[in-house]
Image (cartoon, rainbow, N blue to C red; front, side, top):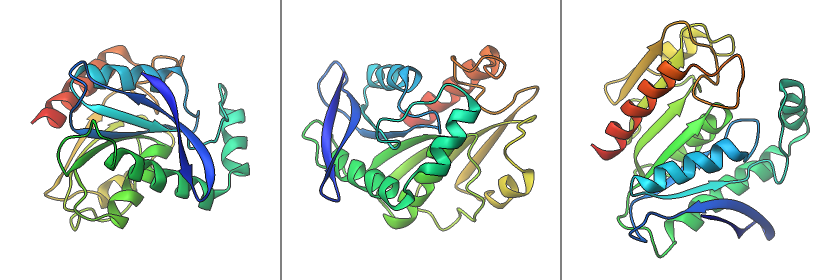
Length: 213
């Protein structure tokens, strides 16, 4: 479990790599929310590695970390989107070629902003992912043409995601779970006022069953 470097468009980028106890396993790309590559994301990587996955979480903000909504909005406004997308693509290449990864198919887990990039990578690499989990990130498009299976988790009281975009995602290869009395970021333990322990526990149980199934 450590920060590692990789190259994206000739620039050095970084990410958090977590390996299972066996030293090898299926590859899983974890894509963070607009807060950046914070301690919650690193802890989540460690938890998923303990489940047998080789987990890699690229730093899509290139060192930027936000703890407030205002600071996160500023990170989003100032980001270089092509550079962020290049980082996500390079992270995917890094994970695919890592010697600890077993199997040709990868998995992905995306949180909010990271869910958007999970959808982008799935579209640009059809057939590479077999399972993708989205936490409160409505990609707002028809996912029926994807070769991956999707599991999506949303709070019923989410003020950032509109139901019409969630409805557009419905397809035979997509399972959507709605959690009552929950807001955005409801699984993130460091989001005071948003974290919902009971719903988070249920969402993670469903996520692990899905990833292992």
